[in-house]
Length: 144
Image 1 (tube, rainbow, N blue to C red):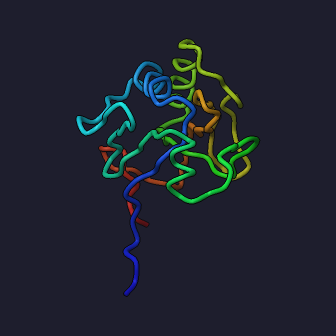
Image 2 (cartoon, rainbow, N blue to C red):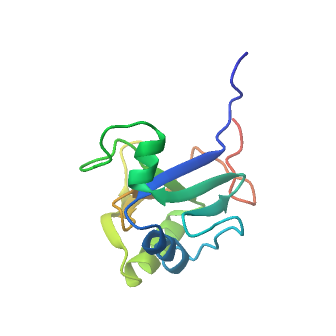
């Protein structure tokens, strides 16, 4: 049996679920799902969910020896805008709310425009405009 080509859930292991939830609610302006509780927070994102779960508990669940997660984590999350101006506006708004800007928005080698911000646990979010990645009115990537 082949695994369907889809992504259902992204879970970030965080130091403090309450603090991380406040970051996404207050800085990004996102609303948590009703299925959230004191131990885990869910945010609906265009057909997939982002969850925030205690890093130690997540490591234990995955049977991983260490949950340290220091340094570059080897992945980034991306939020794509519809224009360079929208990238600048989003990053500017996040910066005004005290979010750490890791890399100011700029033209990038692959032909797009992007910058990076970090959440309270150091997870990197690329805020990008990709002229080669069309999106529908809801912000979903249009298959190409």
